[in-house]
Amino acid sequence: MAPYKAVALVTGALGLGAGGTYGATYLVPLGQASENKPNTQSGNLLDGVDFEFKLKEKTLSLKCLDSSLEQGKKHNLKLRRIDEKSAELICVSGPDQQSATIKMVKEGTEESLETRDEEASDSVGPIYKLECSSYEDYPFRPFMCNFNVPDKELEMTKEASRILFTIKN
Image (cartoon, rainbow, N blue to C red):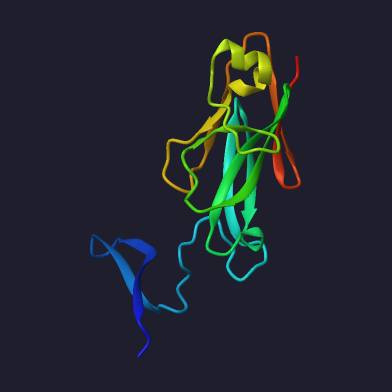
């Protein structure tokens, strides 16, 4: 016998004649019940995890595809400095689950740019002040990106497999 899952039917109606509320439930075979898998499309090459990013009033999403995930690894994000005025967010594979804070790294390295002193700002430019954090549990939706540099405006754009951050002034 197939396992069953109780599903509440949303067909309640006010019983005018008897003066009550009526509703119904029914059983659905577990194999036929759609599983609650947020951010995936079952059986599709586009399976993966969607991460959302907000900068001011703009929201963009980046889908990390399962097809590019290394075996035994998990979806992670890398905020990588391209130059003093730009950075990109890309999908990478990692041994652990993505943390709630995304830290900037220099292009071509795994070196973290966590140093937030004046000497660091001279060597890596103002883009180092870009930070993205989430206050929700995995899969962390949305990440709030902050860029607190006076007289500088940051633009966030979506490209094929990355989100690009560019300082405009």
